[in-house]
Image (spheres, rainbow, N blue to C red):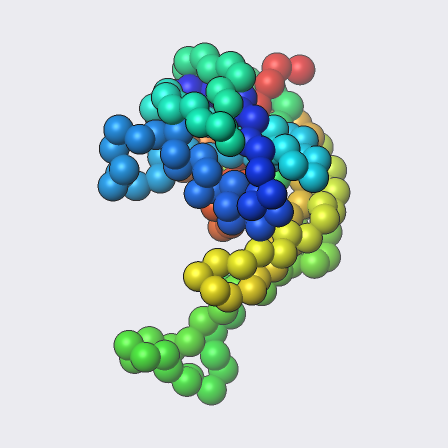
Length: 199
């Protein structure tokens, strides 16, 4: 995998979904491939956004609006029992099913995601996501500024939270897979990238 730092610029980035679209341009060689990168906004100003990105491929293309500041390969060496610090920006939600059984256009019972707003629910959500792969022994949760966006002509909003603390690896192989795929929804908005570091 690759860990890269990028700088994006332009007024279009005021719409958070445009950050995701801009990052796609760093991988011009396989335009039809499924997204195989996660990212997190590290710093934002009115016209620039600094990004930390984890990807299966090395970013290649630089444009007037996208600069690759640094990129390096890294391997996950997650030994069971290892104690690590973690940082995650995530969008903790739960899915609820229509109680009256109403269906959508294709005949499935309607479902929707609702945000978890109580800290106890948010901590329990993350513990479920890491169940059997890591044991969380210290955690702090911090509410971020809501992200308002426009996608396919529709307005939307997500509420990200920063989770940080300490964990112990219980199943290194499965935790590695979880890190590659990301945690929770809203990955197109900079959520899901789990960063680990030694104590």
